Length: 181
Image (cartoon, rainbow, N blue to C red; front, side, top):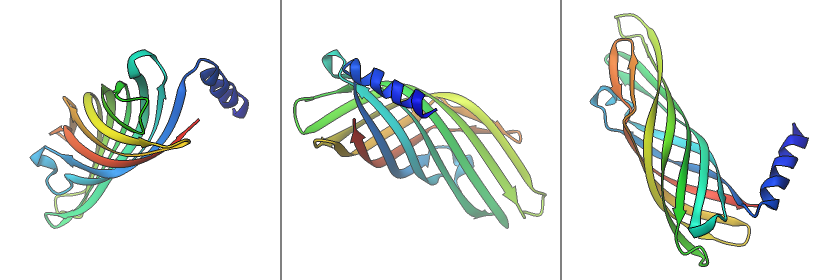
């Protein structure tokens, strides 16, 4: 496995691709009223950005997770969402230290809800869906690292958990730290 990772990094470096591995932390807010008790969630993500293509075009791929537990109707409601995403990014001012960007792509959302102690019985339900996302942000680039802020919106994701239709549209604001290699 280590050999495969080293080979992949060597291949990407030899192609002239500039790699950046980023860690995100922030807050997610769902727009659906069905999730009102857990609509504001903490968010963490790990993302790879490959750049160096003509015209400031980059490729991004990542995995993120959010979740929250709250008291709800005499019981507790626990919500967790796992997200995998891939997209295309346009970075502006690539020769400067301060670099704004816009991006868009596809994401796969896997959500799980658990309700317990509400008198009506416990349930655990899960569903997954595809969604689209758009985002924008700005990064401050140093020799080997990047720091920045990112704003994102996911749309068109819907799930059904225990006969409950849930709109997984959400907004997200996060800060990131990245390592270039």
